[in-house]
Structures are given as structure tokens and as C-alpha cells.
Image (cartoon, rainbow, N blue to C red; front, side, top):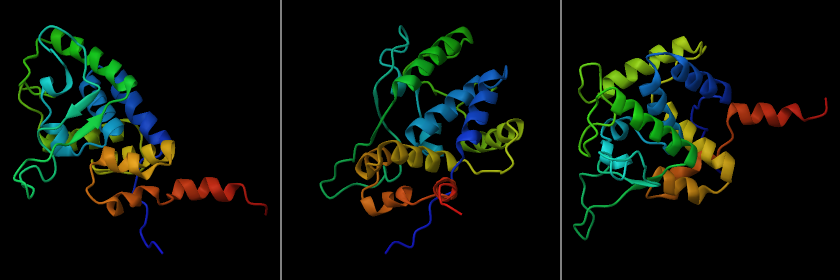
Length: 208
């Protein structure tokens, strides 16, 4: 019998508020795209930090066309070699709604004069340098406050939320395992555990 507890996740209302405030704020579009990618893919902080323009766009210097599947260069365990001495490949699939947002982001970067060379950072700071993990974490706390969230989440909650959302949509733990890039499915089963939000919805239907 499982004794796992569901990971802490953002509620649907919190996700909506975060995406709305970053989309509507004049300085928030970069972070809106960052959180959209995180909530659509479950990428970790350092994996998001490492993304280059060419990881997302097929021919970024001339077109906003995005990839449907992103092959990661940096990921958890990437420095380890498997028994055959070949590096493991990890990929994430991008939903169509996110791909449309990324095409808009390409135009945003072009207007802002940001580099669209394949090896240029996807997310950059005000100083035109790669956005660091520390800056991502600090900005996440700022946007949560601006969104009026009553709870303060750490950045990793975005990964937990993405994978929990995927399980709720599909009820297929194998699909979640593949998007999470877990070697062992036992690691993935935590996302099938009922959350407090699930429990509240369930018991509301009980006669009393």
C-alpha cells in the first residue's frame, strides 16, 4: 500500500493568476513564457536556464517556427554515462498552445534586438546575459506577490504542477513518466496520488 503524499502543487486559480499577471504586466512577458514552458513541460530550473534559442526554434535566425519536440542538452544526470558509454537522450513534447506563444516570443525577442542565433540564451536578463537560476527564483517570488497568491511557492512547484496536471488530464502514468523523464516509474507514481484539492472535490459529493 502506497504511503506517498501528493507533491505540493499550485491550484488552478493560482496558475491562472500567475499567467495572467505576467502576461498583462508590461515587464512580464519573458517570465510569462518561462512559466508557460515550465507548466507545459515540467522542466527543472537549471534545464530552463540552459535553454538556447536553437533548442526551441528550427531556424531561429529566419523563422519563428518551433520544434514539436525539444531535445535537451542539459538535464538531470546528463554528466553521467550509461553502461554503453553513450549519453542518454532526453526530450519533452510541446503542446500547440505553447508553440503559438513561443512564436510570439520569437517576434518579441526580434523587436527587442535580442540575439536569435541558435546558441544564444532563450531567456536573458536586463544586462543581456543568460537568466540565472537565482534570478528566476527571485522573480518567481515577486510575481507570486503581484498575482496575490496567499501561499509562497518554491520554483520547483511548477514542475510538480505540470506533471500532476498531465496525470489528471490523461490518467496515464506512462505518459507522465515519459514527459517527466523518470527512469523508474515508481518515481512518477507520486503524481497519481490525490491532492488536497482532489480530496475536497471528492468529499463535496458525499451526502451529509
